[in-house]
Length: 97
Image (cartoon, rainbow, N blue to C red):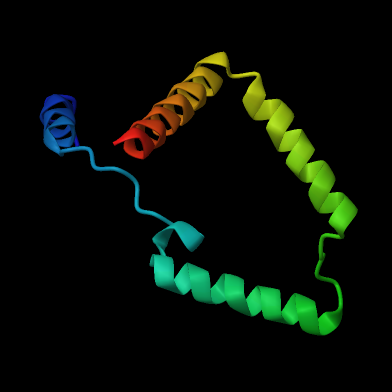
């Protein structure tokens, strides 16, 4: 290829539309297939005795941790409060009618 042909080749390459890269691995699987693989993994872990099951204390601590995390979001907490107050007011109004 001589030097006169190179700019033409570059122009042709630049005209090719860029597409997103193809998904690979688990990303290329359907949701149902990923779910099936996860289910099989869970069954295998249970059968081998290596699956983790939360105790009551672990579950309680996880709930506390999540509660602390979400309560830091003031906007979310105020939205919850408004929604609860709105529902409470509707019930009260219905009782009066």
